[in-house]
Amino acid sequence: MSFFSLAVAYFRANLILPLGSLGIALGVGVLFTVISVFNGFTSELETSIRKVSGDLIVKTSLMNKTSEEDFRQLFTSFSDIVHAEPVLHWFGMIGRRGSRAVSAARSSDLSGVLLVGTDRDIPAASIEGVTAMIVGEILADKLGLKIGDVAEVVSQRPNSKHAQPVRHSFQLTATQSTGRFDQDIDRVLVNRTQLAQLIGLDSNFTDWKINLSNSADLMAVQHDLSMALRDITERSHVKTWRDVGGTLLRAAEDQKGTLAIVFGFIVLVAAYQLIATLLLLISDKRQDIGILGAIGASPASIRSFFLALSCVVTTFGVVFGLIIGMLLNANLHHVELLIGGGKPVFLPEVYKFDHIPVAVDWPQVSILIVFTYVITLLFSLIPAVRATRLPIVTALRQR
Image (cartoon, rainbow, N blue to C red):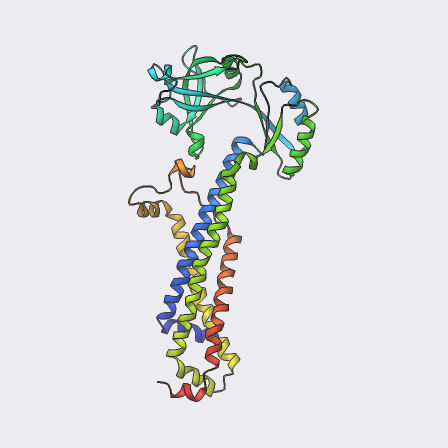
């Protein structure tokens, strides 16, 4: 009979060993879930940032005198740039049409929004003299707007001396859902040319959304494009999508690493309790150890047996831990409601997304499994060495 066969027989015959596996399984399952959630959060955050801003974003000024065509010719000269889209950003406040709140700028019924002028196809308005718009489903629900309803936006025209207010009616012709709360609560998409005319801007773009090829070196293109822009304008600068993500993206990445370390200690504690489990088993099975020594088993063989037993305990723990983790990932919403007493714990206003994103990174899971095995084997050396130091005669006298 091999060491592993004997170890499996001991595992099945002693309840304390499956309980040790359960401790490891809980640690692995929790860490698996935490890593998956944070991988999902950072992955979807990165995807949403790149969807909105592209790989690079060129920020220009309203004082910019460079034409749109000059920018397009410059971008065409870069082989790594596959798409360049002009965007116009302007701020305003939105409220329901006919509401007194629209006339009172300090009213709490008004919502601050970012007017996004785009070349995207926007369904035409059915009312003459009203501009079509697309808003997020969350903003539409907040304002009580349905398709076909009209809202009014208050903004201001740029003026060197005095701000000139502008007020215009917009008809909701479509809604969108990006999955991010902060994008769906304060974005109003309108036609770029119409927005520039309403505001009275000389330029109909303030940013350029740049998409690069998959093989492009992001930092190299940023540097080269920044240098090239100096030849046509002095009022533009280039940001990467990571720059646009700012502190939110960096905080998410830092929290992912921090929590992985913190919850890694759960696995460490679960592995540490394996020492107590095996020491208790040694005390209970001293006579068996003595018999192994009496029939010629060497100290190295006895150590190998306990290391094999540790591997069996760890294997069952890792397998059940992965099952627990995958079950938690598949039912996170129900777990969230259970923890919160029927109410969501992950509020979209705080965590940005209207759902709990999950992404399993199997290379990281492999590292977790290797880490668990290494720790448990190292810890099991203590009881394994202690078992070999037990005198055979003394062990045989134990009952």
